[in-house]
Amino acid sequence: MKYLVGISRIFVGILFIISGLIKLNDPVGFSFKLEEYFSSGVLDLPFFEPYALTISIFVVIFEVLLGVMLLIGFRVKFTVWSLLLMIVGFTFLTFYSAYFNKVTDCGCFGDAIKLTPWESFTKDVILLVLIIILFIGKKYIVSPIGSNTKRIITLVSLLLCSMYAYYVLNHLPVVDFRPYKIGANIAQGMTVPENAPKAIFEYAWEFNINGEKKIIVTKGDYPSVDGEFVDVTTTEIQKGYEPPIHDFTIEQEGEDFTSSLLQEPKLVMVIAYDLGKTQFETFDTIKQTTDKAIKKGYKVIGMSASAKSFADKVVKEYNLGFDFYFTDETTLKTIVRSNPGILVLEKGTILQKVHYNDVDELKFK
Image: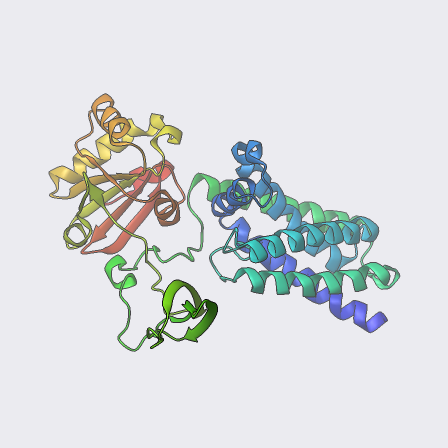
């Protein structure tokens, strides 16, 4: 039992630290995932949505601290109980999401590692078993480190996590795991290779043959049956290749400008997924920056999921030298974790990407 506890302790501790740090790198992204849980019917707690970011920061820092405390053997009873309660909650959420197909990505490892709902549930079940082992054998969780040293390590971990969270919230994630990272070409990210695996579907055809219901299953072709067609049920049995970028469009008044704008040699995108929630005090600086870009020959566009009437009002109020285009809100949230944020592109390749606090760092040729 002692060795089993030791192995479980190392595995759980390291996994919680890694998982927590990945999400701590992008707490805004994790808050978007929490909003999905709050509003999707999994938790059905929409009144928590305004506090999603605060909750996400607390959860990820606590996750890291639990991993550290487990490895150094600090406050063992509290640590093991906290791990058990946390993993029970996570297991319930991932099972509910997987069974009812509510949230398709748990966000357990942010954008670094994508897990399907059932993969997330399996991972949590394994962790639940390991944490139960720790709970049963907590007397074996010991450490030669003194109590004061353990307190110092825990406090230093808390301080470092808090400083890191403060930095990424006021700038951008230090490591960008998303397909819109600097150096990525958006057009290339939307292409599907010729030899990419295609989705395979199974079709259950229902016919009425001489007054009796008959189901015929095929992989696609309409069956040759002498009877009356009633219905067909389609099931995807194998997923096809999905490009990293599959939901990117730039539209204005129903017209798609994606292809043409991604061919611009000098393009600046001002992205505000929701203008109603944006930091309006930054638009004075954004106007100065975009006016400078326009003078240097850049085409500047705004991108938002807000209504055109509201976008036009913002353009008029701040005397902006560009118009807004419509893009899906989830896509804009994925592109940049800042509302607003700015990108500089060259023929679809992202050269610069900044938080609204770092607009003065942009450089225009």
